[in-house]
Length: 375
Image (cartoon, helix red, strand yellow):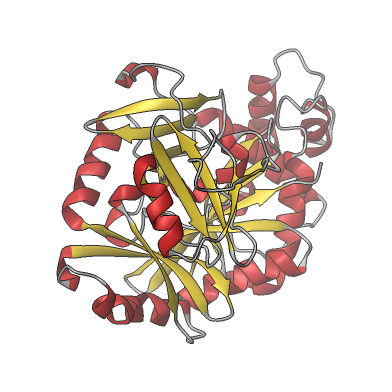
């Protein structure tokens, strides 16, 4: 991973999609790209990562039980820390991240200051792969060592302390992804399956932005609203999302053909729009992979997968990244279990869907999903 900055500092006006790391009271850019997520890495020294057994089927109950499951494993009073629940590491065993409320408040304020209110906050050690049993994954850079261990947790420490920690852990096999390890550790060179840090963090095992610190809802830009409306119109015309109670569909249903024609022409001035406005909309979407050419079929597949859930599902927002062929949706259900049903329905339909932050209040649950299109 070798976390080396591209820029010495980051000014608020230069923010956008990319990856940053927190350095004191500022952010340093590691990777920058035109479109995609905003990810901020929190140094692992500031996070306690635990593997927690939670033999509870209900996600909401797991979240409620997490503080009690870790209370005797942390040095601080449970009321002083934020506990975030991550991916399932093994059967009924989950990754958890523990950060003080004071630090989380400071991090969220820093993201807001730099215009990254929507950014995920991920412990940087999770950029390393989980090693095979009996091994460590190591990444050494600039006098600092990141260590990921076989249970999916990890930590960071000064490189001069690494050999002592390695010996205390029983001298596990070491797989080195960064600079050379100390001479006492016979590390084996290793390489990432994905070279880009962004690719390795697209589906992080843990995002600390949960509960009180969850990212605010993302507003959909006017351009993407228009594109989504056109694409949704085509999907509706082919009955792919008939019966799904979504705001997108409700909006489309209220737009007259003439108004839809105007939207299409705004997106593609000079395009010839035939009698079938939806078909014309599909035709004008670029097919070179640089734009939303795959939005229509991807949205249609999502709609078809969610159709059996009927009015139990409401879609709040849609955004699409044409370069990565990914679609982000925000959906509402009656309960957290309802959101899990949405994820199960998408998976059952062969759709790659990554669940994001979820919250429940006022008798409803709202969650985000990142949908990946096929290559």
